Length: 363
Image (cartoon, rainbow, N blue to C red; front, top):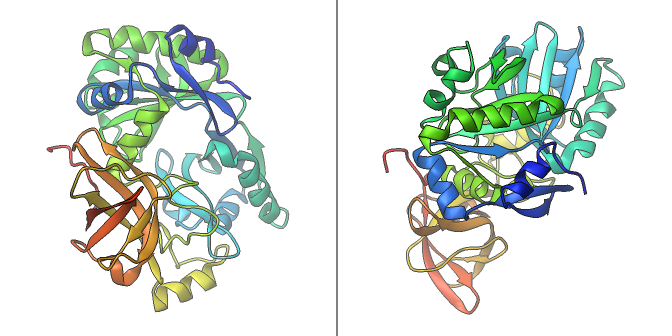
């Protein structure tokens, strides 16, 4: 079991540690609801250093990225980031990722922890014919997500960079918490604002300590992976391994907006045909109309009680105080406001298909 550079810090803070994607990670400190509310109302810090980082460089870098990713990376410029996915050859998704353009011919690919080796092998397979320079930096770098509406105000004293000027899916390489040349990126996964800090493992403890000093007057708290999951689900953000995987197409998952057919990429012809005829099933969002918590794997039923799908992600929303979830159903059952039911043990609990996001900052 791997650990992040901050493992001892989490243990000292009393974190509940659990195995996650091959790492021993903090799932909670005080409890998911308290931590969730901290991020929604003030500022919290996640250690997400288990994520993978690949550097792709050289004159062939963009060609490789364009081949393996569904979004159009030619639209990037230095200081901009892009959400994308890597389609496989059979209609599914190898992984979702964020692509950062660091320099003219230098890109950083940030991938999910559980897929680091799989992604590296997949990209390398296509790079054999292209010849970009690739380096796996995953074991050398740490990543902190400082999230919440007070994040910018609480952290501004730590950087000469104007943090408020970094707009969503943009980043700056600058000084932060006494460390030079860190990536400060506004690519959050919570829907409550803030930013991420990429630094070397040897620097992350200094960054962590300074972040908590700077945030002391703002009620800053460490936040575990359990609250990260409830926060992302309230926004309807997909989680790899739950809502998207090797068997789900980007079009079924509602990721048509990052699937650009203006270029050739892995399996693009088959996906273009799928777009033309329309996918047979879709990822829906639903909320419970009566008491009940939908869990991953629970059956989704139509109004006659027939199973039409399964819950891929579900929870009790701390912000809305009601059960919410995602799952795949045939397109004829995917209309907004359509009534469905979730089978929770022996009960068929009414639910309704809703539009994302579940949580809106004003709510």
